[in-house]
Image (cartoon, rainbow, N blue to C red; front, side, top):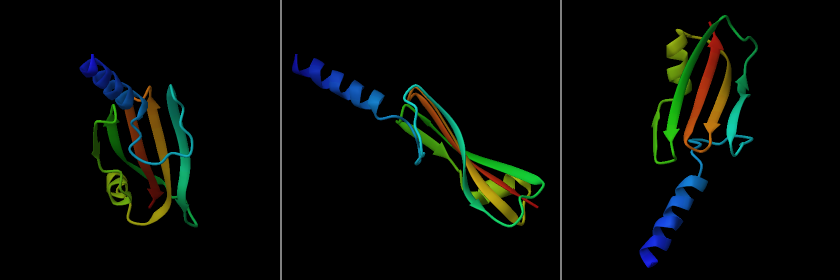
Length: 103
């Protein structure tokens, strides 16, 4: 009986912990898909690069969502703006992306 209660508590903790790898200004319990600014310069630029981290059930998270990785993805040398995108589905799958625009 004690083992069953412990396993139920562990399962509840995993399911309720969510899987957002980083801070998000808003979080939907069932589904999250939002974009927002991190930093803006004087120009936006024509090129765009993206770098993401992903999380599965809050147990495994990996990736590189750094500004440097996003700039490299878009071949950007001069950064004009940095935005983010956050996605979460039922706390099972989460993704946080850094989006860099520039030239």
